[in-house]
Image (tube, rainbow over all chains, first blue to last red; front, side, top):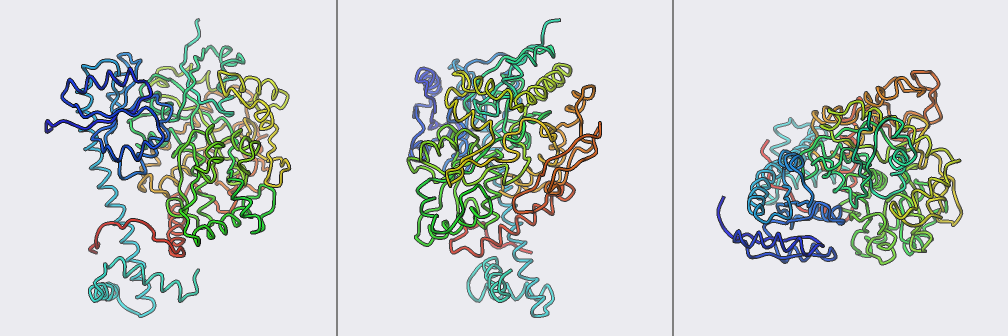
Length: 198
Length: 429
């Protein structure tokens, strides 16, 4: 991966532990580090900071809130590295096997921070690419269904064949400079209205 | 032989009772297992500490292990669910000021899910007409029975989460305060937090999980699958211990002792009066009187501890419905690997328990107490329907999910609001 300094956010109420991670990051050349000790407003502040990666304590009491915020906010699709204090060999191995978009850090060893950071970022990118492909596929599927329903309406009400129905949708879209999916949606709404709704 | 030591996590809530009582009531010990309890502050921590083997077993939201196994958590993981803790005690609670504004819309004062939903819908419409932002409801976790029940209830009136209503995740103990400060407009959380909001004057309880989906599972025992493979006997012993602890918790004669354990400073640490009242299974309605709620907070009986595969299938259907997951026939394999009625059966085979013959049931088929096929022929199941009468057939999950998604999509066309960000470009056919 490209060696450039990353902007890092650390979310931890424990200042001492956060400083150890910060130190490890700085020694690895990542000097742009912002620490967050509390949750109020964190979403807005994270958007302002726009970090490349977020470090978070696995046992942070606000993790449910944070996880949901990160999940719904498109503004913060960022790699997350989690750290735990008490980790024996077995749990580190389990963590390495478990890692998908997050990675577990043995929090108090600053020498390991850089490797963890790199790993979290590269895993995130692989995972994020899959997610994006999935989202595009889902969107296309939904659009295809809408267009199929619009075609069915034309076929039923105007006795058109399927290719003709599609051609009619396409022509209207071109004439009006709209997207075919928008024309299909308008048609379905109008058709529901004419039926008196159901 | 020394007891097998098991690390067990819990979140301090009413329904952690079976795990606590198994540990402190001698049930675990008599099965040769010793539970080391660890109080956790969030479901994400429970899930991830299970994943990295800090914990062997944990008190968990029913859909959480399934969601984690389906890849919806940050860590790859494998967990199993061998027993349920019962039906839970969730309320849908609305800010009192909103309730006052709804009153002239004519809702009655009990906990009826249908009339309150219609009143809520009218109030949502008024909010929209006044160009107010969508109301915000607090939930405890995205992969919780609370979210799926609340979303199911609201969406059945065309109130679509993400468009007409926003969800925000908060720890349950903070819900009453968030309601009072106006940060949220309502919430769905386990008791005693609904009753606490009523007691402090900030909220009114509109309905409960026992109304929305009767007999629904709330919390389960989540077990690290690798640990389970290496500790078969200990796992079976633990399942027996929890099953017996559930029966103890369900017995009204033990309510006082249970209240004491739960209100202890190392568990919930507050609200002994409200906890005690929750255990009587009566809740204050908006009219200010107490209403007994059938099927609320049942720890045992009517096979509520049995890990019905149809429950997991319903949760998966809702994950697909709300876009957490893409539809995929392979989810069935993950469900089968996660919810393990076979372990529950193996644990209780030699005891007095009356086990159902089937692993799944049609949710919503039972309208009355009904005798069903079971190992000893004496098992009766309580009604298990959804409040709107829609039936979930585990043999047609795809059809059920598609019908709900179509209804949700149709609800979109009625609303004056923009359905949200656009997707992609033209699709070629």
